[in-house]
Amino acid sequence: MEFDELLSQVRDLLQREERVSYRASKVRFEIDDDHLEAVKDELIYAKKLATDEDNRVLVRTGDAETTPALTPQPEPTTPPHAPETPPPLVTPTPVEPHTSDAERRQLTVMFCDLVGSTSLSGELDPEDLRDVIRSYQSACTEVIQGYDGHIAQHLGDGLLVYFGYPQAHEDDPQRAVHTGLGLVESLKNLNARLETDRGIQLSIRVGIHTGLVVIGEIGSGSRLEQLALGETPNIAARVEGIAEPNTVAISADTYRLVEGYFDCEVTGEYNLKGVAQPVTAYRVRQQSGKQNRLDVTASRGLTPLAGRESELSLLLDRWEQAKSGQGQVVLLSGEAGIGKSRLIRTLRDRVSTEPHNRLECRCSPYFQNTTLYPLNDLTERTCGFDQQDTNEDKLHKLEANLSQFRPDIKTTVPILAFPLSIPLPEDRYPPLNLTPQRRKEKALETIISLLLEAAEREPVLFILEDLHWVDATTIELLDPE
Image 1 (cartoon, rainbow, N blue to C red):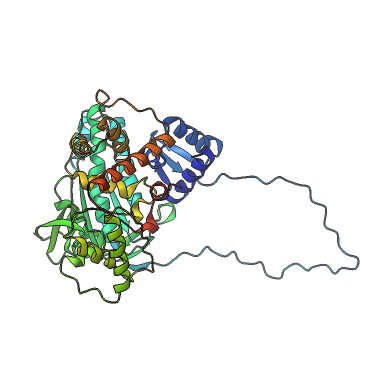
Image 2: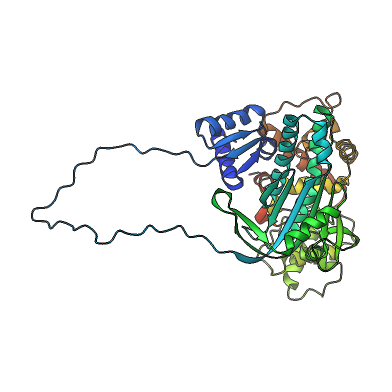
């Protein structure tokens, strides 16, 4: 990627997200430290479009102001005998800027709070404590913004986050739960650094509730805030209080909206302070692997597919050709809701009794800017990564999976571990010292090599859904020309 193209993409991302971490930028754009420093110099000092925060996050400050050149203008001339314009009889009244009224809306509210922050303040110097809290908030912000959450307030060592305001999505409850799990996972990486640097570990609790609120301006003068009022924020705060450290707790109202998408276990029924009725709470264990409502509904049984006989016949014909050694590619497109995923599911069911290797992955609206996201997700599921796995556990699983293929794991592991953010011990895997472009090329070559070798052993049914959310590098994998 040319530097000007890289700079343009980083600037566009910064304008959308407002805050961009350096580490995520290196992974997302596959750049080295020199390119990152050049981007920082251009945006912070040359263009003055951003500032640096803790040498970890790029924060947008707005477009640089430009001062137009002052060109002398000729004095206006009055045509002969032109009548003079009389002064206005009434001075116009300045128009006050319009302030939007409060609005009622369905909102998913999340509270996130540090556990044991009082004891932590007794262990650390105030300046060190401030650095730790800022690192924690920065890590949380990166995850929250990834799912388009809105941080309404920083509450000391806690965060109040809205999903569904100011931008609403049809899957806001799911986004909130994804974010909660992401916060717990992100804290593991932060703790690894804090343990080394300061000998401390942080723990958080996350509570989520969905319900009706009235949201609008609260406060006066310079302290105006857009806050949600009603029982919903109160219940979310109480649910967070009953969560165990490093877990995500959700109310029954949120559970009904995300049921099937996550593995949850009921923790009990609670009489919460300030809440009239008892509230049932659930602990979110992990994602269930189900990606859409069809996956969730299928577990309860589906009606027979009707009206798609010709399309299904075409897919089965192409599958027969693929089994005979003639590779086939089929693009299935159409308006949302016409049954594309259902057709694919029917194909899977029809060939399920035949010997083959099915590799299924899906693009995501949350990870459109994450390089090779659908393939990385496929790798994690194929290797059996678990939420409780350490980086060492993940490395062992990746090595075990790749050892089944011909290429030496000394070359494949470093290439595939990088986009999975798995650190490698240098005594076993010396640094490759590749440019970002060459690293990307090697990753694509490795993936294609592994897929071809898998196809030599048995027919492969490779399914990639939701291409409208695909990242640019995955497009290169699908269409190398």
